[in-house]
Image (cartoon, rainbow, N blue to C red):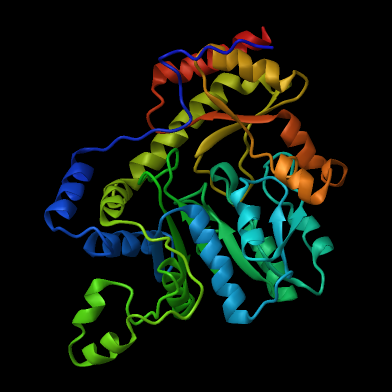
Length: 395
């Protein structure tokens, strides 16, 4: 057993810095006495949609909620049956598969590429059956999935696409922004993400009908004619709104977010270029400092036609014991997390049995992969500390 004692000056995996603009926006929301859906949320949604190449973006209380309502909206719109199948990567945060189960659908796992951690498009078609309805590619760690190949398969086989972009913002795959290529794109603004609102998420789409369904499901399944108190002020149509504002069309959820969270998000979103540039600078310092350890560590790579936002910095040991390395780092104040193990989680082992032999790349990553912080507040001194601590372990 290792006795892990975390230093007070640890290099964490996430950050939050509320600047003067964010404080001002939150204060304006409070002074307006408006905490429910209002002007800050509308501005946040509009800017986010524009930056990600979509007409619509709906703000909700988490990226998981965005994924949940995206799947539910598609299921209701296209009349999928309980038990229909949704393809998900064998390496991802548990929410990607959980929302499939919560929608009474069946997750079907697809193995990933060992070197990028993202779903392997070459394996997708092998998993498609007559009951397959959708695929959820995940842009893991900030690296977009291979969307051109995935979209081609989806078009050919009649599948809907939900982009799990909870770990990526502002970057492109094949020249198109993440969240702009599927039927719905889902993002997170939880702690450690690019734009942090405490909790929060967004669902993007080009489809006005899907947008209305998403917003309705976020708000208890309410009739889309009344999703905000401002909808009661519609001039000549006011009576129609009054008659329908307490109608519920679906079994929805209380997934709403507040104006204060939107105000925090808007302030950071207006500064997205510097956030992205800072994360990339941290990653480049790590890559330079660890380049000669390629025989010991798998470093992140960016395939042609892709961009990387480096929400986190993934690593995988080639020969060493992962636990020995991560405990070595933790004892010296470098925070770590396992690299998104999914199929070996206790809950999934109970449901699906031991899947390791069927997913060799996922098994390799589960046994060897972890990540360290790569956010905009990792200082140059801390970057050198992370690099030197890793190098010291291998010495």
